[in-house]
Image (cartoon, rainbow, N blue to C red; front, side):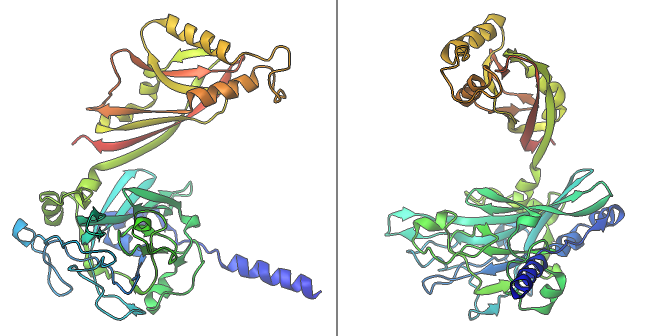
Length: 433
């Protein structure tokens, strides 16, 4: 009986660690967007955490055009914040703004240069951009791991469900020139609005699916994570996912410090009009970037090689909307492939099919492969798929696929009988004005 009660207690406690994110109606979402997006940004905003390592404080977010907690930015080039100089590691926080208070305290105010975009009828994105005067440090006076200026961000993706209710579905956390792409329910640490309002939000930990993610900013390079990691303090690790991050300070940004920074605002125009060096992903530039992802099916085919460029373009009219970008195609199967190859002479397709058959033949005698449960053509199909690959990436230039004169997109089917194949298409790039 006692053991059974312990099991029940464990189940109850585990269940208590998963909650439900607040949903809003379609009309409410439309209202929040029409009012400039600040209320939406605040409703699901991160709690930000900062830490120091080796007794050295980090650089801390600040204003890009001379502002402060008591004064606004002045949006002209003469008020642009100067870059901070690099110092020897581990002094990553020299000559830049620091938290300025003892550890285990709420940190001071800083601005969020935010943008928002309704990407489709079912998706809205809000970007929370943080500005730093630099990142990194010099190592032994030779290797420079830092940069003049640093822009980092969290992007929260809101999705509408079949009941016309909206809620956050994913968070993109900028990290070393890429993003940690997390489903909302997979974010390790989240808080309720009531916990945010209570002030000290170090606790609780390990609770998922609340409205406010905990975001831990790495000490040296300002990469974003949903977990702490205090085990690595060497300079090389600071440019990896082992980067040191902790919770010595925390801050939830007051809504009055949210600055809309797209190209319709003075802030956005100023941010986009000056040179930030290698920190090119400033808010108005990022606003131009767009993602599209959709799935389509290929016409069923039996074994052979098929040119599908025209069919892909009919399935993806969105390509025409992009000034520059990348189309990535991924086929979700293990007995077929995608490739780029000859688009003019049909004989090349037939020759390719025959050549692959010679390289990886059917197991007609039953002594070539162990796996035969799905027929003599199945295991050879898996091998051919591994050789050719499941994906292709193609540049987009001025609304067109930038393939070579003789290049086309191929679908290679390796099974003997017709199959319906599923392709995920992802477009990333800058849309035409």
